[in-house]
Image (cartoon, rainbow, N blue to C red; front, side):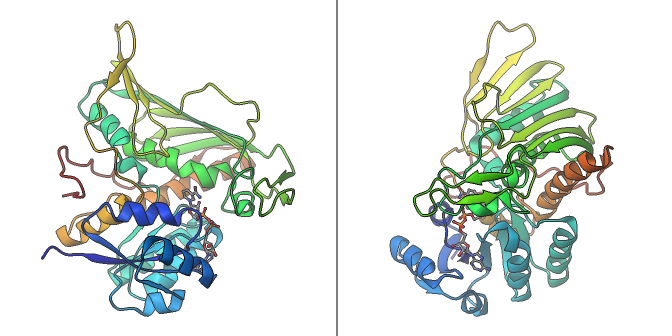
Length: 367
Ligand SMILES: NC(=O)c1ccc[n+]([C@@H]2O[C@H](COP(=O)([O-])OP(=O)(O)OC[C@H]3O[C@@H](n4cnc5c(N)ncnc54)[C@H](O)[C@@H]3O)[C@@H](O)[C@H]2O)c1
């Protein structure tokens, strides 16, 4: 029988259902248990999705039949929960960010390495059909040599709809730590690691007002930057521009991500999705060509842990790795440092560009 990995979810909030459904799209994963600080949340998730076991975090981590813990807690406790799961002998896939600062991120990578365990991190959207198609076009040389990229996440913040909006404005939140990982992971996946960054940041409002019925009208103090304008120098020499903001109140018509090469321009889909559209315009073309996706777009959150499980079986690196997430954390921390100090920051982390997925995989398979 093919290897099957039992997965335990820690944190049963807003995003947990997406993971249950996403993991169930992969033959190699079995969602075996779920846990939350608030037992009623774990019990409700287990009941809704027929998960065999709802239990405490300690009981989940003590269960020898669980091999992979998926950490879906709030950012402030990501590092502590990931370390706890590693100490219990579990491989871990964490929601983003990996940690709130380099020291905690490094401690996670070191603990995993010392224990011979895998650590992975969201986002895994770059394993979806849209971003894999873009990667193939770039690797195939269709746009020539990439020279520059732009990426824009122009929003007004999630406090209007999210049932627990407070963490978005605390350390580890803000648009950079909340949405930045999607954009930065996509860019590193497409163009390789970043060598140097610069940025200016600001927070335009001192507080936000919650809109979800559970908290409607509550004031949320803003403790983080809510607008970052950043520059990225990739190790390849390409230059990126990133604006990421919760301070855009009248909307924006800027694209999500574009990659500019010596032979053409690629319009990259929203990196918070697994699908398209992908558009290409080569030098001399009259207009944009809609590109058919070369990889599946029907995958979901869970493809990262599934790739980790396949990687363990096949003794190969997993793609949504802790090292990649640490590099993204390094970039985000360096943006804030650059703005505060008024200088460029040279990065010390240089992970390998994750391998592209093969073309033509059967549904539910990754190797
Ligand atoms: N909501 C989304 O659309 C979305 C999308 C992608 C990623 N994420 C990420 O997923 C993570 C969770 O987000 P969410 O929206 O589900 O938040 P949420 O607040 O709805 O859920 C978090 C859950 O974690 C539990 N929790 C907190 N600390 C814990 C601990 N120490 N041990 C066990 N459980 C604990 C909370 O009780 C809560 O049920 C965040 O990192 C967020 O950035 C969220």
